[in-house]
Length: 214
Image 1 (cartoon, one colour):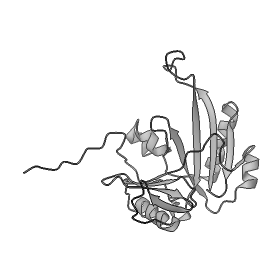
Image 2 (cartoon, rainbow, N blue to C red; image 1 turned 90 degrees about the vertical axis):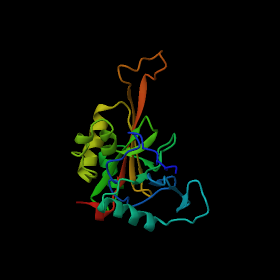
Image 3 (cartoon, rainbow, N blue to C red; image 1 turned 180 degrees about the vertical axis):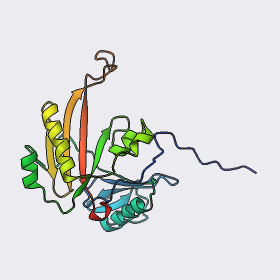
């Protein structure tokens, strides 16, 4: 009798951590995923979550997705994931000039945000903790899944000071701050040898549900 063998996920597919938090707000283009064993995924379209690909099985609401993500955090379920949408050429929301401008614009119904960064290998936004785990799983446990408002402003201030012409925008409807800038590529990435000379860095701070604050 033949024995069915489930495919073993690659190192990059394995996730050690559940979602860092349940977002307080969502935006069209966000994804909600069951990474294994089914690999099911849903994408938010016009305020509702439809299967991707759409098999006609029905849609989820924001409340249902948020409650599921809260449960994944509480019960430590790494198979469940949230993937914020990637911005286009223009960052969503309104431009932000600096920390004082953001402090004036952003209402804070929650004291925490979940930091996401662009993973250049996958082309997706991933939690900072997950990106660290790809290189050093032990070190990743030292990274808190969320940060405070003041911690976010500290990161924003460092980017303003250290990076050349960074962009900032605040998307109130999606509850998130976008930060994008260019930095020189690694030494091994040599221009003229098929490697870009500069890399685009993207940070997204997603407003977290109050129940996920420890």
